[in-house]
Amino acid sequence: AQSVTQLDSQVPVFEEAPVELRCNYSSSVSVYLFWYVQYPNQGLQLLLKYLSGSTLVKGINGFEAEFNKSQTSFHLRKPSVHISDTAEYFCAVSAPNSGGSNYKLTFGKGTLLTVNP
Amino acid sequence: KAGVTQTPRYLIKTRGQQVTLSCSPISGHRSVSWYQQTPGQGLQFLFEYFSETQRNKGNFPGRFSGRQFSNSRSEMNVSTLELGDSALYLCASSWGDRETGEAFFGQGTRLTVV
Image 1 (cartoon, rainbow over the protein chains, first blue to last red):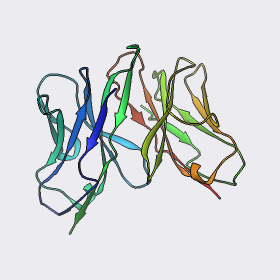
Image 2 (cartoon, rainbow over the protein chains, first blue to last red):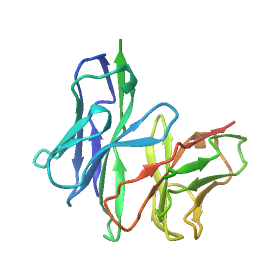
Image 3 (cartoon, rainbow over the protein chains, first blue to last red):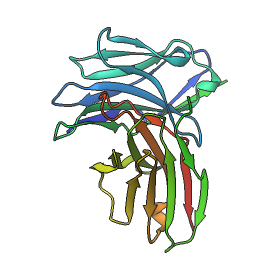
C-alpha cells in the first residue's frame, strides 16, 4: 500500500516570498503524483501532475514541482506567492490497487498555505 | 465541457435521518469516487464505482452506501445520521480505464447534522 506524508500542516508566508510545500511518499510500485489545491468551501482543483518524463513539472498559477525518485519526494514550489494563493494544498499518489485492476488515489493530510500582506 | 456536478451544495439534517447526495461526472467518465472531508480526519476515501459496480471501498460503516446508474451518475446515501457525519462530501470522476488515477472533483456537498 502507498502512503503520503505532507511534512507541514501550516505554512505562513509573506506576499511575494518564495514557498515550498513538502511531500514525501512511500510505495512498493511505480506511482503517478499529483498536487491539488482547495479554496475555502470548494472542491479540489488539479494544480499539476507527474506521469512520466521530465522530473520538473509546471502547473497552473505559476506552481511547479520536482519528482525525486531516490528521495521519494514531490515538493511543490512557487517563486513568488500572492494573497490569492491562500488555500489548502494536497499531495496525492496514484498506484495500482492490490488486485492491480485499477489505480487508487491516496491523499496527504494537506498543507494550509496562508499568504500575508 | 461541463465539470463534475454535485447536488445539493448544502444540507442540514437531524440526527437519525437519512440523506442522499448526487454526483454527475464529466461526460465520458465511468468512474465516480466519494470522499468525506473533515477538519480532524482530512480526506477519507469512501468508495468508488465503475460501470455501475463498486470497485473499491474505504473503511466506513455500512450506514454509508452508494450506487451508480447506467449514465454514470452516482448517488451516496447515509442512513441513521450521526453528529460526526457532518462533513464536506466530495465526488470525483475519472475515465476509470485509462489509468493514471487522475481525478476531477466537484465542489462538494456540505452536510450539517444537528
